[in-house]
Image (cartoon, rainbow over all chains, first blue to last red; front, side, top):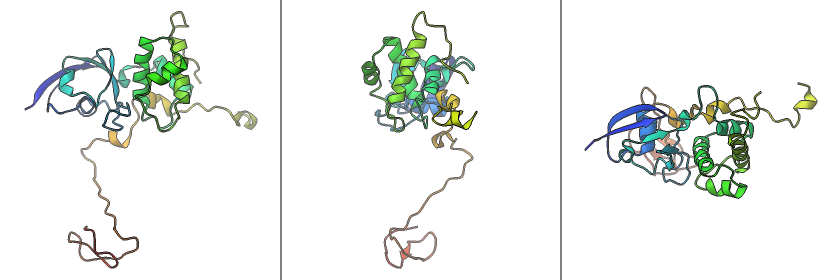
Length: 167
Length: 68
């Protein structure tokens, strides 16, 4: 039996009749058409599908779409303001925090949550905070550097939203 | 840029803005409608000749396992 689900994703309202077994990530990708959120493993290991649900970081392949009914969701597509990248996105670019980019949306959404909870994390805290996200290209070193760089830019009193470098 | 400045220099990747904003395009992002689907059938033998007709059980000269 289909159930009605209404959610807000990146400020836009979506409403669909869905099978109760439909996972949130498939709702986001197939019904809302936002393919920036990736399915890497389908088993909640890799974190490529990480999104923000009511301010909490969630692996969206772990949640049914019906459980998100009424929720405010943010995906990677909702992070930049127009053509201005979010400081975390800018830092991933500047610090070479990605190669193929498949894990990147999940990494950035997890990093966003991490920095909201802990604006000035140590390297160890960043590595612990991202242990639910897997990357098979970079070896994590530059991802950690990117998050450290983003934390500096986002720190209270830092130069407001100045990209670290633009070429 | 002089060659001497290029060696060892960090090059700004042009593909990153779309990859960090979720606007990259991976195979899984291709819509399922209006696309051609393909199946790959592999022989169970390493060096065999395929005998018989398409759609019928496959007969190989050195291995009789496998179907089309």
